[in-house]
Amino acid sequence: MGRAIEAEAVKRGHTILLRVDSEQDWKRGEGLLPEVDIAIEFSLPGMAVCNIRRCFDANIAAVVGTTGWEQDLDTIKKECLDGNKTLFVASNFSPGMNIFFEVNKLLARLMNRFNQFDVKIYELHHKHKLDAPSGTALTLAGQIIDEMDQKKKWVLGTRSSEDELEVFSLREAEAPGTHSINYTSEMEKIEFTHTATNRAVFAIGAVMAAEWLQGKQGFFGMEDFLFDSK
Image (cartoon, rainbow, N blue to C red):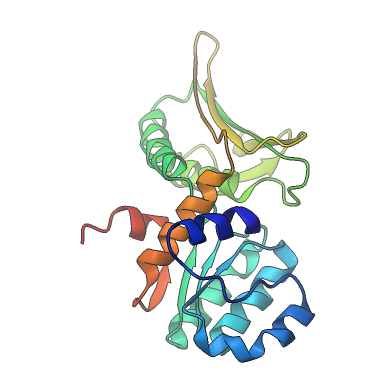
């Protein structure tokens, strides 16, 4: 993802001042930080929070696409707002997936009346992805739980009670990402799926989000970007 983001940023006329993959990179690049307009963070779940806080300390706006650190999101959001920092967080930067999110909410709202259907989420990603379920799957699950009275929480794999939403994760080769929502009854099935055929779509979305974030202050997500009419 880092290479894809760099390629897209350069193609759109931006300059890459610093590439950070380790603590040593942070130290070597310390003198460049005052010149940085924005950071795009796609790292590992265990590194994301530290990287975000380093951006806060340097007053650098950050776009974050790393998932797997959701347990710290409320804390980081509060630090962002209390400190007058700038942060853009998304579980998925694909424009198509964010349209998929909106359809997911609408369908779950409609299906809430029809208890004969059970709903499941299936997601497939490349074998290098460390978190499971994916951040995108968790976003989809949260939307369904918010809209459907019969689902109270998600579980990875087979459920133990009817109020649990099953999420199934598969890691395979270099698959860029597929998410499916399945509603099944004894007599019919509704299924809708989003597949990313090239991971470059996430890089394009992240760079576009970074461009949009210029000059803004606060905590933002893809809905703010997609539905900004200005």
